Image (cartoon, rainbow, N blue to C red; front, side, top):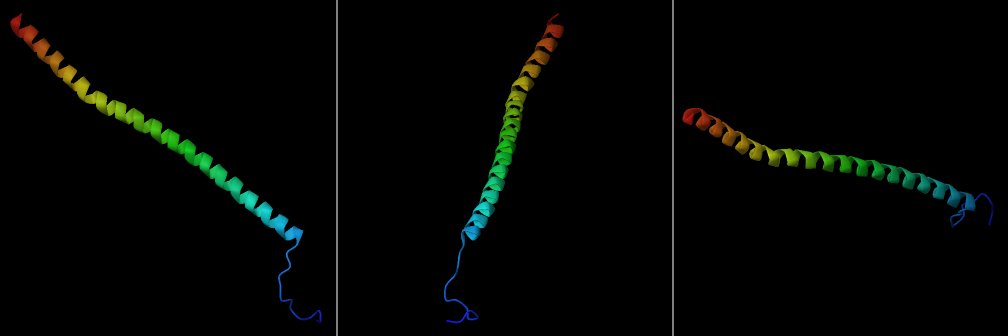
Length: 80
C-alpha cells in the first residue's frame, strides 16, 4: 500500500484524546458555573416570593384591624 493513498481506518492519538478531554472539562466547568448562578437566582427569587406572599396575606388582616379601630373610634365618639 502506497503512502499517498488514504487509510481505510481512523488514527486517534493520545494527543487527540487529551485535547478532547480538555475541551470536555472546560464545558463541564462552564455548565457548573451556570448551574451555580441559576441556583443563586432561584434562591433570591424564592426569598422575594416569600416576602410578597407574607405581605399579601398580612394586608387583609391589617385592613380588618383598621376598620375595627375606625368603628371603635366612631362608636367612642358617638357614645361619649
